[in-house]
Length: 390
Image (tube, rainbow, N blue to C red):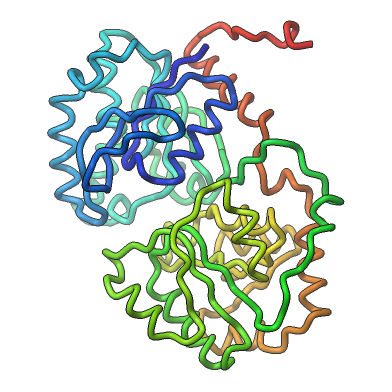
């Protein structure tokens, strides 16, 4: 069985749990190690007890650098009881630095995979800091065996033009994980949520103040015909007044965190539309990413709302679905949605549900294929060859 050491920037990040689920479903054994954004160590992530590398704080670049430097000294002892892995996956640049230290601690030539699912604004700066960050990434990634990323726009706008990583690229979209195959007929049978009011769900990492303010003003303009349902983890470093802001808005509500994939059908089943817009790093990462909520919302029939001039918007345009905005204004939202009725919504939703379910979901076959690719990098024999499963 392939043994993967997974080094992560935040063991409490729900996306980390989803990747672990995929790796285990594909037949890999996983050891998890990383930083946390919580006061106390995390005891369990999908049945694993993480190796705790210390606490970091969101948005505090200098503090995170110091934490990485400290962990680089201690990571050998922290992993002392861990058997040598066949492969190391480093999620984000800071963990790529620690992956090389971890490999030295095992005193073996363990291949490293670099998983980069966001392009941080610091590496895109034109000043000395940006050039230093890109130089550090090129140096640390000089011998990685595979780059895993989630959007073709990351490759086209960053990795290729800057020449950051010479390794082969694996495009692994932020799809929903499906235990069993789903047919379009099964999804078309799902009942529409009652309307009005029409409900827009903004779920996941809530880090965009502009989205929050735009949705609040839009809901006020429509005087309750549209309600905004927020679920997930608000980035209080970006809007420390998040809870007070939501409480003061008549048509906004925050339902707290949720479990993925366990709660996805329920929370998306309560809304008509999915907010797939992010201005957090406008013009850069936010315009290039294909977010989790895009796939999750469409999987459960929520009609996505996106900016037309982003990678998400272009993706939806190719699929022939969704509501695409020309501008990020309350007026543009009102023009696009203000005359919504049951017939028009049924048409929009039917288009989403008519797409091939595999557009939105990974299944066990995808997990198996991922682990097979990783096994090939590590040159570990498959304990369950295809002929044995036939």
